[in-house]
Image (cartoon, rainbow, N blue to C red; front, side, top):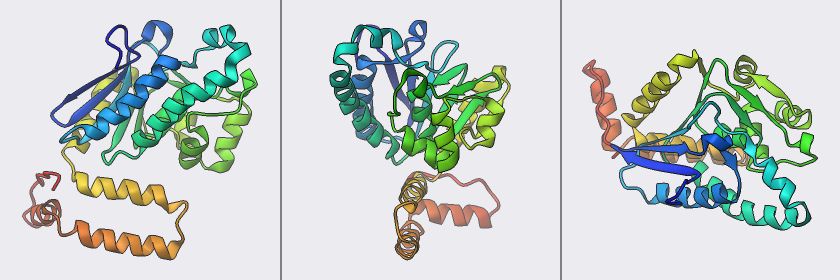
Length: 264
């Protein structure tokens, strides 16, 4: 990460990784620095010991305005080269970020635009403030989509709804975003941080071995033949049910107490 005015900050404590977009005065833009830092962030998260959950958030009034249009104006003649450079970092980071074994919880306030929507849509649980808004501005700029938009938006919204969102450069209020599958939980603005943190803590205390396999199975389901997926589910279940966490879960249920999962 950059030490001076970084685009992203990472703090890990007690198995919780807090990832903060940290340039609110600029609208937390996705630019070259952000792309480089995000690639490193993904490596740092994979290398972290004892990680149990990731909390993705942003400083300021808005989650992110997405691409830095002011920067685009200064590089129009070399834009294709710049896009190849930025996405080499960003897309590598996103691929690894979305494949983390632990749950990712996104906390969204204000505007989330363009590639920032794709970023948060890759989270496992998206908690949004009542006043949040989600926009796809790619086609307004004459752009196709990047930042994994075609992957995460389709996974959350379905192909037809994601396509319409992108083609029409729609702006969705939070209730419409929830109805489309883009958002999971909507809360009053003043309750956003508290509700998100409660979700983060709940997942951090959960069976991380089971979480990892659920994430993998769901991710693979779209491209795996049903009979292969069923066998993968069966063999995975057989492995996971032999874990200490599974033994604790069954015992706690029988004893009518809250389980204490250790991630083993």
